[in-house]
Length: 192
Image (cartoon, rainbow, N blue to C red; front, side, top):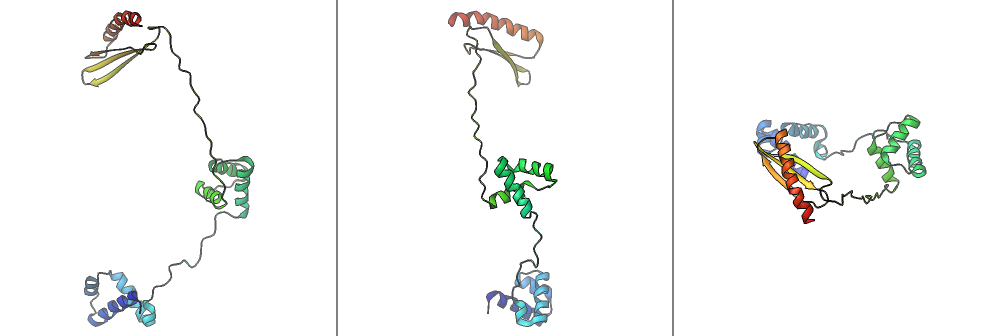
């Protein structure tokens, strides 16, 4: 006899002896619905009722996609090399057929259609640089802490940086920083 069937038979016999379901459940470590299920099955079919039944569903739901829809998906992929998202929108636009992306992916995988791989290389960009120091300067402000503002300027040609701290971000502080940069600009040009 199978170990599971022996265990269930023990539960049923224990319950038939004491007629206290709570005691049996506590002692055996099972729930009341579990005991009730196996007791009822044992009463109806005897020892055969203690065997596990198949969990397989009695009927399967209808498939979402038939052969016609699958052929439409594969044709769009083969003829126009579209990805799943574009196939989805084309099916809706052309055939008024609404399918999920997961469904389209499953059909493509089931038919072993390779995924579209597009390798886009990043274009080499040409950095625009000024060749003369001081022609172009980037100015920036940043709040470092309460009452502490950092003004920064970076020269485009030399990458020379000037920093200064102020307690507030005001127009007068900005003009003062501009004057500080201008005084350093002569040094930048001479050192270049």
